[in-house]
Image 1: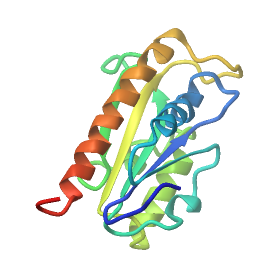
Image 2: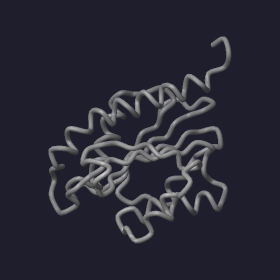
Image 3: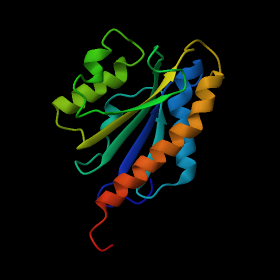
Amino acid sequence: MQDRGKGSVRVIGCGRWIRGDDQVGLLVAEALARLRLPRTQVETTEAPGAELFDGLRPEDLLILVDAASARNTQPTGSLVRIDYRSAPDRIGTRCRTNTHTLSVDAALELGLELGMLPADVWIYVVAAEDFGFGEEVSAPVADGIPEAVRRIRHDVEAWLRCKEPAGA
């Protein structure tokens, strides 16, 4: 883990390595880790759950990156950022029948109920289409990875600037 000052960032890429587009969260996290952003810890998980909360503090930013089925309003490979605390309809409520996101949803809802979530929780969802067995992501998802990395990097850097003491 890199240095953790006031207002550190924890990025967790979620997915399954051999499930096609489902691995996009893992791939985005790996690319972000290579950037070595300050005060940012980046990791991947194939089984998100209670481990999401290890070492989190109220002043931290938790970022989850995951895939979800593309819809007509969200083309494959596109990225959406959800501010979990201000979402009018939390993901856990919207996706209760989607077993792909159940573990992430359940963990976030549990963390919220137990008061373990930091003030800022962002979820970056990459629209995906192929969750079958395979080591390759679809072309539209692969094309969207650089933009996801760029946008998350930009958002993390902006969030960290807001946490710097005045005059620093």
